[in-house]
Length: 432
Ligand code: URA
Figure 1: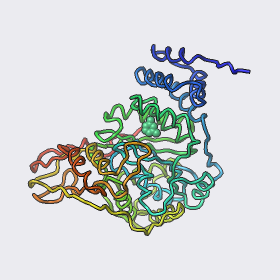
Figure 2: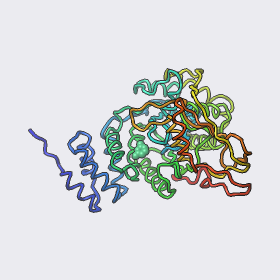
Figure 3: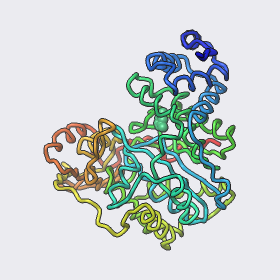
Figure 4: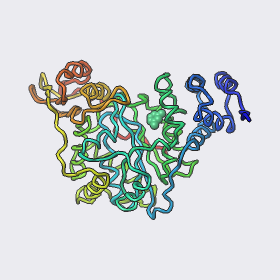
């Protein structure tokens, strides 16, 4: 007996194309029918473009998020005996905050179920960075994840394909149809995975600026407030920060070198911008689960966060004492005059690191763990002629030329007193 479908997808596409709003049963059916293959890829592509062009109401976005959650498994940590709290970043150049943040927060007795992804294009992926550590496994079973959360409190691992599978399918389609940058689609994509993950609290790091997914701060604000509303409606205590991604974060862009920099932060040092975001998010993640006004910085100084890091790495097969990979070839660019670094644009530095082998152009490509860029000077630093500005790292020297091409015009040394162009403060806003 054939099943009679309750809607005609072409009607729904027409309705969205003409600026209408879809109701809850229509959206639930659309996502379910797409997940089981009844709605064809080309039909969903047309729908994604109609959404891109015409937007969605808040209730449509909520329905879309809920439908994507319902397409797969959900996790539940209610009986873990610890509160769960997590962070998600929309991604940027040199963004390694998850690495020091997860063990830091877990060292306060809460659980951080951090499901992460791999890098694509110029923004790096947390799993790629951690895979620089010998033996470390990104894939663990739900039972292993639960046991590690109960014991260590900190887990960073790959999201299984069972979580919001409709999003996996739709994201791949958006990637090849020019429909990635639609706020309703980004918000529902991110929040469906985070809500399905079962965290009780969530801090969102929504980036703006040249190295971010959405460059314009007002669009980032809209994305942030859409996601905060989705989280709150689903019972997840959610706060968002708008953070500046005009300049690379920290001094390391790549994989192994970002782990090295994270270890500096866990040892009580590290670049001030990385420490500022780590501490800001840690405070908020703890406040959302009832630990208000906690002084988190001492846990970076006294070894508590480092201890949790070592246990977190070892629990997933990694050797926290293993030497990190080093590049076969390096090339250092020096200052051509005395002055002040007045500009250092995130996007070209991200592209250059990617071209050196730190990122991948296709999902199936491997990454070179030792590839990337080490920045020796940051905007505002005084430099003298001949002083190293940054070092390019790669295993394949033929990659230097294209990386340097990407960096043409990406940084500037000005005269003392010239304005530094960095797009303003690191944390530019908060939405809750
Ligand atoms: N990250 C996601 O998971 N989904 C998007 O749509 C964009 C960024």
